[in-house]
Image (cartoon, rainbow, N blue to C red; front, top):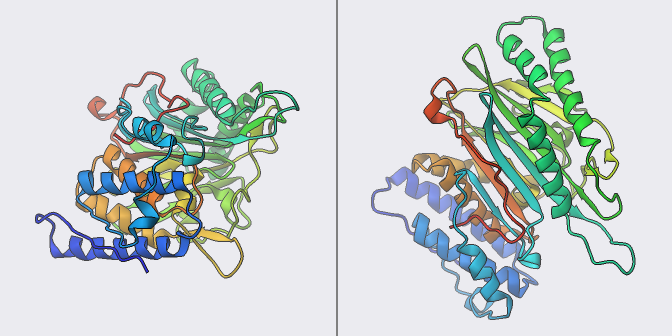
Length: 398
């Protein structure tokens, strides 16, 4: 069995030392279970992430089975190391890294920007399809990139301004739930209509969409998560040390419109990879997405918008077969440690991504945006953003 030696900075107290021991034990269990048939590119990437975890987070994971992780040298190494040193995005909370299986073409696209006092995060996981015979293969980045750019341009053109302003006016003042639900459905249908306008070759490329909108109604913050496919928004409560998955497609008997409070404490479906099939291709999505909404608290909440590269990595098998479920206990421990160290949104995103790369059993593109709930009345807490999304060969780990 691989042994892990955990070291923490002297400034950490006993509670943090105990927490990091718990985390490293969990990492050990993950890797012991998943290390068989490790490919060279994956081993090299894990090795580099182990080094960064030690140098930037003072967490040293030392493997005795060095021949498993540290001896690989192959043509892709120079490309990989160049990607790992790509300068960080000016949008601090975003981290995106390609799979070692295609290190020069990240098929995820992730954007986060402020528009009209809303913080909007667009996260797309491109899905590759078969190209017509004789044509060059097309990767999922084309779909994810095109959809993310289209959706951002529609936000910036104010096409969605009417349903958003309506929600700002009624969420915290309207006692009639039917009226609120009608306004939420209007937003969902408007987004859905935009998705039907994307121009893609249906047989060649498709994408998921996780759209997260943070807005205020009468100085009270609210979060809206719209989901197509298996990308997710995760809401962490640091007071309770709990995480709620807001993609209601992952729950049994999930309604089209869900309140966050109705999902707290519920358990998602055990699922194999890509169980959720409502992705977007050349004919648009197969069906209307799901929408989850609710009041959030700037003192206790942070949220993560991510592709399944993160959630699959942090999932554990249940019962038998290939069914997996997000290991919330492990994720909560990681986020609790991040909070105890006072990590910024950027550093938290990087920390989660490094851990995910190290423990994943299925190398995949990983894209993460973390945000503590901001008080929009303070303009210094709201980022002003240009168009931001990683190019095809970009990794945001430096």
